[in-house]
Image (cartoon, rainbow, N blue to C red; front, side):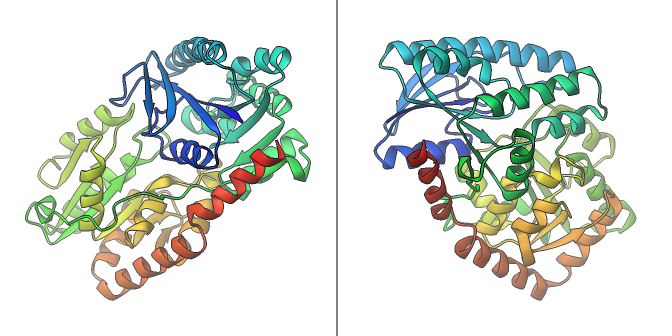
Length: 389
């Protein structure tokens, strides 16, 4: 089977879920091509990596405003369509696998389904309407256009896979999907170097290291963590905690400005996008990880990669108590049930001061990931969807 995977918001192999899916399909004997944007340091327009053909296209940039989203999605659709035409001319494909957000990639798939008989699999990473509302804080004409795009994608798709049960339940209801057309393929890290050496210099001479990894966008709540650090340092008078916030995104510059305005340069490091080697060393060194995605209708449906990566390294967590966050982390986290920087900071301090609890939470998370949420189970679901298709 020849498979074409389309992803708009991250490149491969940086997008871990998409790359793991591509590798799993390759290992099952499929011929896999991936189309993705040129960004995050992955700018080569075409390459073959580990037996997978990759086409990358120009994109206007990661959006932070409504106008930016329109420019980003217009450039992405144009680039992905012409890369799909190139893949079609070089041998064609039997299945086109659409990874959201956005839910506009059905426009790329439509001619190939109508005129080429290609099957369409819709891989729902996020509920795009909820994500749109979380970013802009309102419902308007564009919100309902987003809902229409979601319905069009569901109508075009032959099969749907989703990152968790709550996302799948939502799209099944909206698309009126039959049970045999819907599958849960959870995200879990499969190839991180959990044996990496720790790097004590990351503590900058402090006793404790608190870490964050992930995107820094308007829906990710990193500003809560920066303000929690301010609360810890100034209100709680703690000088023994170093914060390491790894990742990039459209809000990174604004968050740096917030950090500097609060005078946290000596205790809060924001290196931007880091290498896998640096990331694994940091995860080994950290005393706890933070997931500061605020509680809202969008984040309640999201399985956060950072949560699973903390669990892979047996790190305890402090996080806002989103529905799917609590399901993923189970007994490995302390949950803050209100979007409050001060309460987030207080929970971080309380956990740092309780080493026995940190050890117990970290062990519980590692066991849950290893035995219940591991990638091998998800591969079985992924291959079942493809076998049905």
